[in-house]
Length: 254
View 1: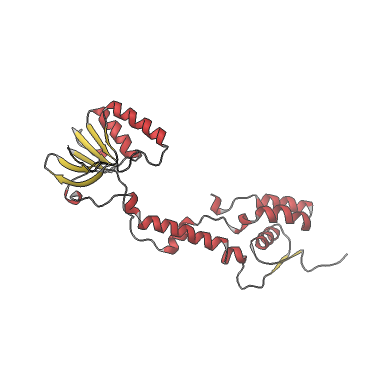
View 2: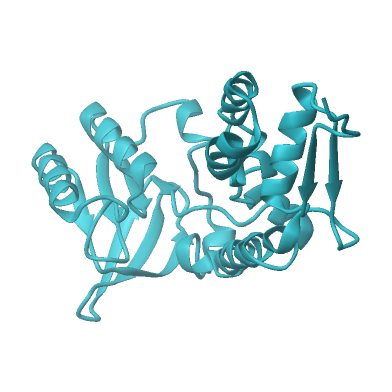
């Protein structure tokens, strides 16, 4: 019987080569791997799909962060000098306000609008677009608005807030409706539910690591290396072990 120095030799340290080498070694096969480049991983890991898609995704997230004012809280004249509440304070009010204006119509805003209206507060809701709950289907959102309207909530859609002012016991909110007409609302409380500014600065490398959408090397080619190649180079016993190994989830799969 011919003697061999190794049970298996693998040419190429890309995703498939590393996957086979790792699986074979863990199953007890004496393994060697040859790679001409200085770094293991192959083109996909270092120069292709993984870095390019990671950069694209990172750029998308960074773009959203830079333009967060578009989706969150815009600058409103007088707001910095006018007391208002957010979802952090609304659950700790000492007494039920007689009236409330809610800025924006996300889930928290709509939930609070219905709850406080049911408790007896006169509630007005202001939304910049023509739909509440903008992340939901319009048919569903319109139906919810119809229900809340029948319960007593007043909606101002396609409206922009021009300014707010503290009048003491009341706050004044001046709007511009979709036709450019000014509307003045007065309320005891203003609930600002328009999102938040980003909390601090984030390094690009940290952001990339946080949003990296790709699996580990063992996941990239587990089907090719574990199912296709194992049929040609391993015994039935080893193939069963490899099949089990390559079906394990990597860290990125949670």
